[in-house]
Amino acid sequence: MRIFNSLTRKKEEFKPIHAQNVGMYTCGPTVYDFSSIGNFRTYVTSDVLRRTLTLNGYKVKSVMNITDVGHLTGDGDLGEDKLAKAAKREHKTAWDIAKFYGEAFEKDSKKLNILPHDVVARATDHIKEQIQLIRRLEGKGFTYKTSDGIYFDTVKYEKDTGAKYGELSTLDEIKEGSRVEKNPEKKNPRDFALWKFSYKGGRSFDSAQDDAASCRHMEWESPWGFGFPGWHIECSAMSMKYLGETFDVHTGGEDLRQTHHPNEVAQSEGATGKKFVNYWMHVTFLLVDGKRMGKSVGNAYTVSDVEKKGIEPLALRYLYLTAHYRDPLNFTWEALEGAQSALERLRSQVSNFSSQESGGGKGKVKEYRDKFTDALDNDLGTPQALAVVWDVVKSDISSVDKRKLILSFDEVLGLEVSKVPQVSKVPKEVRERVRQREELRKQEKWDEADKVRKEMLEMGYTIKDTDSGPQVKKLRVTSNK
Ligand code: AMP
Ligand code: ZN
Image 1 (tube, rainbow, N blue to C red):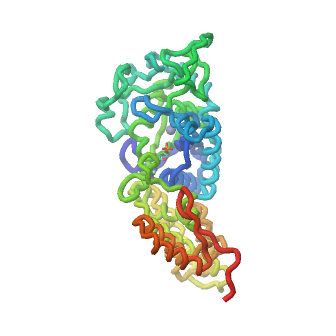
Image 2: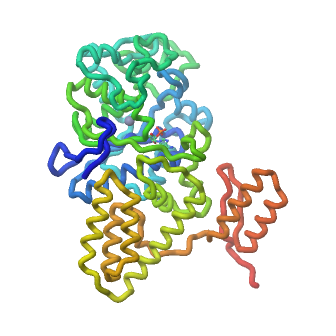
């Protein structure tokens, strides 16, 4: 199996540390909002990697973190805490926010058929481990204190270990340390927070200092006073706890390669003196109109937006698979519709195969199986793997074999192809009208939009406008004609 390693920028033969077992870690969500279908491109890729490793006979231990303690919105470890901000917005505590969106994430992951991870590690459950790791770094002299926290000293780290900070990054400014920063107390612009004080200057345990403005729902005692961990330290502490100080594969979205992952490497290797991760894999962003899909950009759709349009989440999984994970994928509703149709066609083929007579072409079964495996083993070539599925559908091998083959492929693809094909809950014609109506409403053509709504009613569907877009439902009682 070959995978593209972002560390060496080369496709490499995958050689695990242990012959049979592979350890992999995926940077999970910060649970202050619903994860977008952009985020899920990364998580589905990670799932396909895990299933491909299993196909290759490895026993995989998969670990994902949940960032449930808010890191800061601004650059330079300044700005507002994302969870605290959401708590204010929703009049809840940061703990409630983390719980609610954590559960939502789990539900969406299930809908996308992402296998449950062996370990789901919450940052707030691992404060002790994070403090221990910072202590180790402190012991080696790689930390310093400012008025707002304990920082990692990247220059001292490079000097003492001979390592180069930021090797993963493609930005020269990170490697050279010229990133523009607003935190004047840092010794070097690329240094980063390991621990942040809840109170400016730190608050000792016995002080009754109570500054409402800086009061947090989430803070812990530490050797440095009340505070909370910096964003990066959790991934080093938790991955090493569950996978060992050196492990096989670490994945995440392409943005993490610039700062978060270089920081993970520096902290981990700084503390242990060992190589942290052998293979780094980064997923290229899902785009909308050529721009990154992201909550901060304001163009993010969620899994429930997809469902509200009458499209099933697995159609999204199909769409992701149509592009290679290192190629950009531009999201459109039309493309998702296409994926839904293709998935329905595939399921209907598979269900027919079972009832058909067996035929010839036995020798080709192995050929197709090899082609499929080769596609995935070549740095997760999912578009090629899907093409093999359709080649099998059209081939002259027996229908029994076709069915068996495609079901076995589905162990990796995870599309539930054996699901009894249903005419999608909301027919395509209705979905098209939903889109049409939305477009008209955007252009403030209310009368025309209403006409489309009436057409939909005649087709037996109602539409309700909600905060997150239109919701389509089949009318319970359709009129007798
Ligand atoms: P976040 O919740 O923003 O920390 O992101 C969670 C994961 O999703 C990270 O691995 C990000 O790199 C990844 N990610 C964020 N936006 C996108 C996108 N548009 N496409 C693919 N992955 C993304
Ligand atoms: Zn991480």
